[in-house]
Length: 144
Image 1 (cartoon, one colour):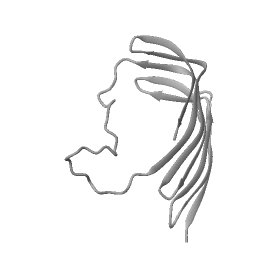
Image 2 (cartoon, one colour; image 1 turned 90 degrees about the vertical axis):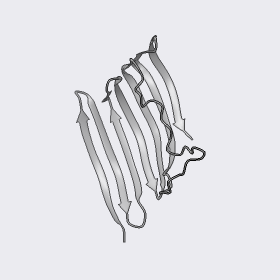
Image 3 (cartoon, rainbow, N blue to C red; image 1 turned 30 degrees about the vertical axis):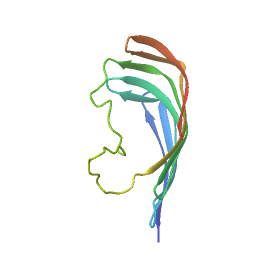
Image 4 (cartoon, rainbow, N blue to C red; image 1 turned 180 degrees about the vertical axis):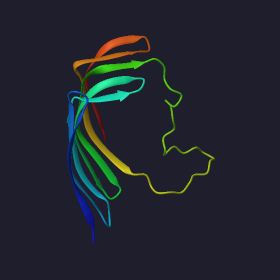
């Protein structure tokens, strides 16, 4: 017999930001997730690099050992300033194999499928770093 929960919620963030979440999470034999996340003008602050507003429209699902995230994220305005890269900027990924080094046996990695369109600079997204100062405009697709 499985168990499940229905999610419905909304929140406000900052003076104009608002978001909502809805969907279902079920567990028992396997974990099954079907959730949507939406928002408008949500403030995101990544110290000390960025202060931006985002508008996500994402669908997040998980069935068994597969996580899928799809949808669109708008980053209409904000500022990104990179003074220097932190020491942790370059890391080896978790699936890196170093020849001659023993590997740890553990749970297989979670399969992740992504299909996300990110659009930036609809209003003004300023970037400053590495000798460059510019307003960013465009889109990038994150996915398989």
